[in-house]
Length: 124
Ligand SMILES: [Zn+2]
Image 1 (cartoon, helix red, strand yellow):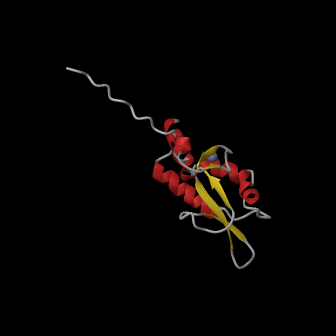
Image 2: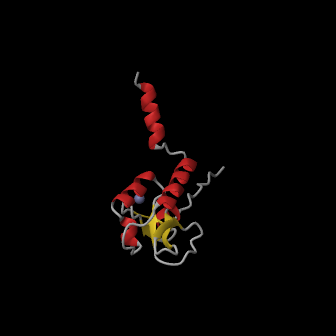
Image 3: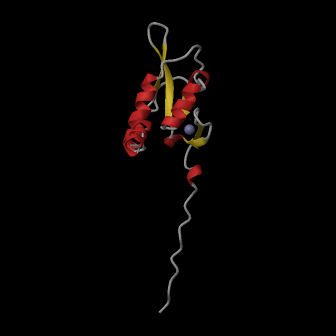
């Protein structure tokens, strides 16, 4: 009886599967599909808000962000959205914050609030 070796199919490396973008939070390069695309949206009052482009179809300059609290906070702290989206002044990022929080909740990453609660419970 002849034992046949099963050839292991060579899978293409993940990094070559699509366009790569740089996260404005941590500045790491990542596949675009793993990042959130955010765009600037202007309201009638000349104020600017940053919102997540869920469909990938919104026009204008886009910035890319890991859907994590850490990258979001880093981006806000460094005003990376304003720079990446060419916004003068500080844009309203509350929509992005909400979106990322929702994503984090979905993926089950521990939120700082939950960690804090756990700490409080362990200390007498
Ligand atoms: Zn990041």
